Length: 277
Ligand SMILES: Cc1cc2nc3c(=O)[nH]c(=O)nc-3n(C[C@H](O)[C@H](O)[C@H](O)COP(=O)(O)OP(=O)(O)OC[C@H]3O[C@@H](n4cnc5c(N)ncnc54)[C@H](O)[C@@H]3O)c2cc1C
Image (cartoon, rainbow, N blue to C red):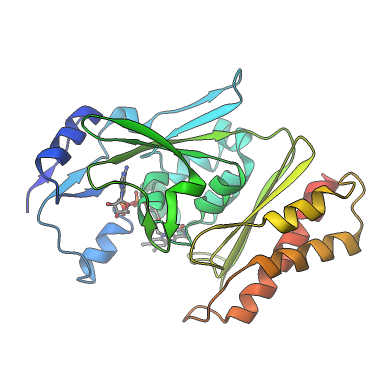
């Protein structure tokens, strides 16, 4: 099996144009599991790990937008300047797998897999992030809401590489919370990102629907309240409304009923944390 290791983005997109059935790999933490379980049979692989442009990140204070290259690993997001700029992403990154997985696994790979349980994805949804894509002859940018189109399905075309994400910072609190069957090395059973920008609350849910869910009804309701004076009954009502917008299923990790309850509790707690911050 040929494995190409391009050293530039243009080389990678040219290789993909020449080998349209090639599989892309970054950290391999999803990809190699699929190969090992015989779910994927790549004839050709293009590794994106050695492309310097895809490992870059940048905080543009003037525009308030953070760019994170697709190959940036979770270990870089969970601390330092990136964590200060995007605390919810840092919290999500800290919950991913083990230190080994966080050293190899990337945001581009989380977007490539597009599992509803992907920990970075509710954060990208709540923060109104955009996904950058590039082929050998074109570039485009999609809002995250248009990028993820189903469970493990995204709008990336076969000849495109995800090059990175642009994430607007918020001027209010942001946080992420996840429920799993244990504290470490766990895929989420339910997850919530809550962000406050211009005194307006946004909330996005993971693992409780075919895609990440933005709770527009619960957002409209809470944003019609005075969010500087949230009492417990308002926070609980917000959680109930968030639960109602979830669309969970029963599977080997949890029941739909538990998931619906869990996102409500997480949303209530995040709102309490965010408005008391
Ligand atoms: C033990 C273990 C624990 C885990 N725990 C978690 C967890 O808690 N939370 C979580 O969200 N995930 C978890 N994962 C899944 C995985 O680590 C993440 O989804 C990670 O973000 C994948 O990144 P990667 O760079 O390793 O992707 P890869 O495995 O390299 O690729 C994943 C998919 O994305 C495609 N791809 C990769 N890069 C690009 C790109 N730049 N452009 C286009 N397509 C691309 C690949 O073709 C492939 O389809 C876990 C995995 C393991 C093995």
